[in-house]
Length: 158
Length: 459
Image (cartoon, rainbow over all chains, first blue to last red; front, side):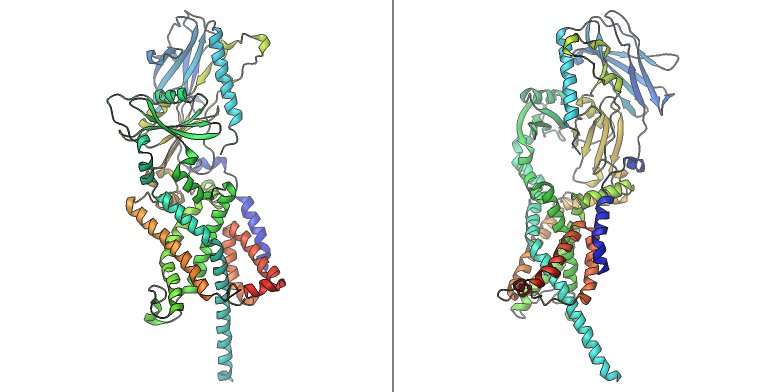
């Protein structure tokens, strides 16, 4: 009969003990090599100028030593199909940079296509050049509002 | 003295064995009567779900089949089409076509409901739209998994499945051959059909049950890992210990996309100080689905996968495939801003227990070994319904008027042995444990105090 008395205790223990996933659990499983990529651009860019736009690659917080193949795609607004393809120039200090003159004011996209070994990264950054029209500003605001809503709306999943 | 003692000892022993037999009979009976309806529901809905591929191929033929052409549109063009037709929907997933004559699927949510939109990738036209929770096989799956009652239903199914284990254990004890020699296979392995009505009713339950219980045991053990309470705990323990599935395949979180906070920080603006200094606020944009498909290609993931589109700023693209064969399973998380593969979990990356569970699930679902897997599954399901019904008939054929017909309750002392075994199950399966405590309290405190119940239960 002693066993019966302890059963509820054991049950509670089982129910409480096991419920949360360990955030470190991924350490038990195969991991991928991680190369971080960042596109760095000046905060404000004027039309007809050639701003300094760099791609920085890092591994474990250190600048990546290995040479990568980096290509840029630049397009304006939604015209991705007409994007210009520009190979990156490699500086002596190991940064890859874009040589490009933005022809007019507006919203541009710069995509860096980076290949190192079998890692393929392809970040795209939105670059705003000169003065934006009211329409363009509203569009960006709308997108930001949308993102904010999504973020607050879907935190209860999993 | 010796000679006098012997008969009384063996008589006592016999009595003890009889009592134990009766107590097991009682538990087998309680469990059987209560969970029989659930077992039948699970068997029927499982039988439908087993043939999901054939049923859906026939039902949604017009949505699935497309005519191959020389030019094909990109995934993002197809998604744009779906967005244009459903302007208030959020696109949540994309499933590329997995053969030249198969449509692509775009998952959307609208007003809190999930839909699948089927798109002809060549013509870029929408073939049809289905609400996910109303897809026929999904409804059967929902009944099978949670009786259409959400979390509560999930617990009921789990509880019934665990009690079915108790039925198998107690059933094996009850049906264990009592005769020695050759004749013991009769009544266990081969039914005795011409030895009277009573024996026939018994054998028509015991003999099929013996054969079917192996299949039933397999279905219970492979089904439990996806149950809500026991299954989740089991998966969490095995994942945390690094012996089961990698995190995020079943339990645990996916890695997060690297959000460069500076770039996505909100511009502090209000209506008064427009225009916004918006040109200083550069940000990364989400990868297009086309890029994700090309990454899948480069990573050697075969079509037949689904891409979950991130809905939050630190979410990831999750590429997942749970095809017919466990070996081909993939769960891959991709940073939504850079396209970096943050985690790539294939079958080969599962640890041993994870591999076993994965195979268990594909066999349970009837997809691992093609049509034979489905046929054997179906036979087991028919068998389960058969033993539930024959068990009920067996009870009816023995039941006296106005009573349950269980053998007289044995003393506490004899019950101990059985209780210990059942308590072990109760600890492993908490829902069983809780219900055992309820039944035991009822058996011990309610029945003896109510004369009508005492008569009814023969206690």
